[in-house]
Length: 189
Image (cartoon, rainbow, N blue to C red; front, side, top):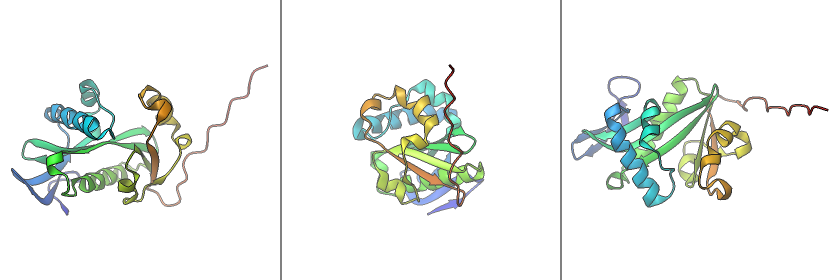
């Protein structure tokens, strides 16, 4: 269980790490090298995350939260805003030595709460492990429901033509169905 410590993002877990209580907090600049190592290690070992470059992580450090055991980053997740009503949950990773302690669950709860505070109406994720996200209320969606993601990033992914990920959506506002679909422009004569 996570209890509030200092503000809306800093939480401490009942789980004890090697250096005391495990804290979930916003990422700091000094965390980026450890986030880089963790995300890319999980991308190699599990093949269920996209690798991230160091420059990308520095650019989007404000999107990230971390689970920290003292000064060691042992888990991470990010909330990347795409549009006024849409954000992506990405780069959820927990160090193999700390798996099985429900840290992924604690990170997800913190990310969802962060999205609610920002008044994001819909979250999405692309994953090879849909059952994990379904526990938080995510439901299967289609890539057509995610045009911002599909056209801004997916086309650069090495898996683009043979994607093995499931698109999942979580509506944070009751009854929310998303923005009106973009209508095709008329063709010119």
